[in-house]
Structures are given as structure tokens and as C-alpha cells.
Length: 447
Image: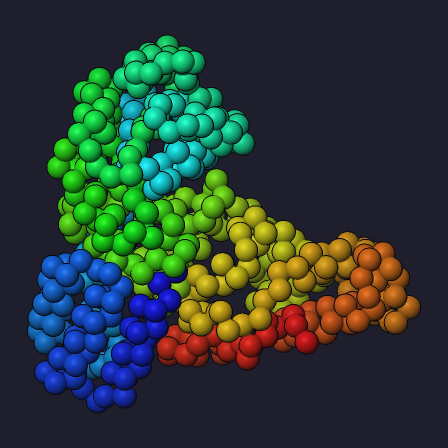
């Protein structure tokens, strides 16, 4: 996501790790590199300058622990200041009213309609009854797009055929939400290619009539500082309560993510992390600071696990993995759990020390092959009660539509994973000392 910025930070931290102590000279050099990295990432100049000033003061002040490695001292300072810059803590939605009204606004092309559906999917998981209001009457097919997206998550959309007044649609939608007992009304609004008086006047009228608890501005991370400037203008006119930052899975340079909260003084509440309807998550400043500095994303990894994995099964599997006693049956369950959480490469990138994952060869199609091969085994074979002799391997290959070489590779890889698990305590110590995850370019199930 922030590859170039993360790489520059890690290079700088590596240089500091070779120093015996933090001095004014090496701090000044590190601070200069941080400034250049932030500006190159399209961070607002005033924000970058204020951030650098705080980092320098803290690094030179009493907050530095003398007994800690200089590189780690400086990383700690930068991390703490990044967290403060992006809002300090995770900001929640105001959902006390019944119904809670959430007004979604932003420029055309920022992804407002998609984010309405994503937010509905997110809140539906929280057991909320959602009604979507189609109030974008400017863009052709906006209503059809919202209906198509909402049908996938089985959330109703309120619209009025032929109506030209978005305020009337919104008022009728609010009336329906109250009468039918919906918990949340999410209102999709029209955007423009640029800010104009008509757009702002329309939003002001919608806000006046709906009295929303949340006014969320949708900003595309791909537009960098333009997103920050636009958010500030929207806040000046209609007082937003927070921001949804989209397209963070693309080639965003991090500027908007780092700057927008500081400039608007309003929290970043959600981030879009992909194209799927479920690819929306609460924005967490600690998580984002971890990702920017190449420390993984344990916060959201744990969140994904809690949402998708059965706790009892997970504990049992963890015990088997740590003892390296798990079987092909357990392996199949593990693959099923991982699939629920997303792509393997995406999940591995969330682990500390895995920022260089692009260099690692991961073919996720191999998992489909392995699943087919394991399902072609007998119960005794899955539980490793019998040896997988050549005859059995040929039968497994024929049953799964694969080749004997594929079965041989899987068996070899499975043995590697067991050995990998036996070595896990040593690997954990290595990572805690700042080392990278020790994969030599191939994952343990490969050749």
C-alpha cells in the first residue's frame, strides 16, 4: 500500500541501528530523511513540518530511553507521533439514535455509492437493520448501481421513480425508516467533478432536513493532497463528522491518510482496502502507523480472525500446530479458515517483518489443488494412520485431477510445514529482535 514510504523508513531505521547512541547529529540526519520521505509521499507541507518538529523535540528530550537501541528509540518516537497525527484512537460511529442517519458525501468518482453499500454490509454484520436512500439524482445509473450493490447483501434501497428533488426522497426515506423500525438510514448523495454552489446548497438542505448523526466525507487516497483540501472545504460548509478513505489498496502515496485528520480536525472513521463489498474496515491510527513503518497489521489480522474463525476450533488447531502434531484433516480445516479471512498474500503482509512479501513466490491456485488432493484421501490417509505409498499417491492424483508430481510436492511441503512449526519458537525470537520472516523466496509448501 505505502511501499515507497515504508521502504524509505526502513532504510533510515537500519542506518540508525548501527549507531551506539542517539546524538543531535544523527537525529538531525534522520529527521531530514523523514521530512523528505513524507513530502515525497504527498503529505501536507505544514503537517509534515509540524510532525518533524515534534519528532525532533521528543527524540532529543527526556522521552528517549537511554538503555534501548538507538534505532528502536527513534522508531518508537516516529510511531507514537504518527499515531497522534492520525487521531490517536479508533473513532466509532454515533449509533445511539433510532434510526441513526448517516449522510455520505464527496466528489463524483470518489466511490460514494460503493461505500454506502460497503458501510451497509459492515453494519449488517453488527446486527443492524439498514435502509439505503438513493438521493444521487444527478449521475445516470447511480440508483441502479446502488440497487445492484445492495441486492448482494440483501439490504433494501428506497427510491422514487422520476423524482428530481433529492430532499423529498431523503425525507420520505427517513419516514419509512422510522415507521418500519430500521436502525440505520444511509443516504447516498450526488457529487460533482468539482465543488460548486449547487452541490453544497443541496447538501446543506439535506443536512437541515435529515439532522444526521454522521456526515461522512468519502475521499480517494489516489488523489493525495487534493482529497485533503476538498475534505476541508466540505467540512467548512457542512461540518463533516469524519472521513472514509478509499483506494488504499492501490498505489496511494500515503499523503491523504497521514494528513487528512490533522488538517480537518475530524477523525478518519473507515478505510476501503479492496474492491469487494466486505473490504471496508474501521480506521485505526495504531494499525496505520504499523503499516507505514513496515511493522505489519496485527490489529486488523486479529479482527479478521475474530470475525471469521471459530474460537474453539482455532485453539485446538493452535495446540496441534505448536506441537507439530496436526494432520492433513487439520490442514484442510486451516485452509478453510484462512480462505474466509481473505487472500493468503494479503494476510501474510499483515504479519510483522513481512513487508518484503512481494519478493516471495505465492501461487494461491496451489491451495485449490491441495484442497482437492486432501479431499481425495481416505479418512485414514488424512489422519496419517497409513503411509502414502506410490499406489495411494497415484489414486489421490487421479481422484483430484492432478498429477503424481503435485501429490509428491504436497506431501513434501506438508512435512516442511511440520518442521517449520517445530522451529517456530526460534523464529519468533528472531523476529522480535528485528529480523525478517525467514522465507528464502518460496513458502514452505513449495519445492
